[in-house]
Image (tube, rainbow, N blue to C red):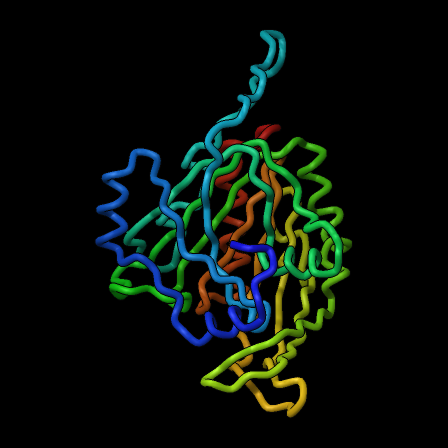
Length: 284
């Protein structure tokens, strides 16, 4: 995806359902691909703030050095049991997609990064050593999934201990430039064109509810309107929340689908923290 999607593109994308692979096709592709390089469709709309997660692994990266014989046991690989399990969810899971990676940035919110870079700043993401990501698809999901179908996404990253601690310690500074961000750009809807405007806000609303440290990051956006007439050009987005949890040198970024709630997200964050103990340094 380009770093600077046009305002027109973002509005046009919001006017259509986000299309996902159906469960049957997902399972068929998973059997055919040893590397399971399945990518879930990503939509980042600077007007309305609908987003999903895309996961991809780079081709190769140097392996971390092994510990010396005198050093205490150290965990390197992030195994699948360190992630949330289907049994942890309140609803049955039909499909589980998982992907590993090396040297991935710890993206907390794709559009938050765009807000920062649009102001001439860095995106602010920490770099991980190893990562593992998953998407859990509800059982009895429709053949064509949309962003409202209750998907659960989780990214789990191993960082250096200092970087993992710093990520949560500096989260308020990361979010501060986007406490109130005006998104302005050209649009075209139903043959009408003009300049649209919307206001986006990111806030850290809760801390310390899971693991060695945790934060709940909430994104809200106003209804996009025509800058000249003030007339609405799309619906107001639903607020979205992201849980960020640290256990030792691990960071997990956890999100729910459009029907998820913050209490459920906090509950899953607590469960995720306990699961992370299987891979954390130091051990829980």
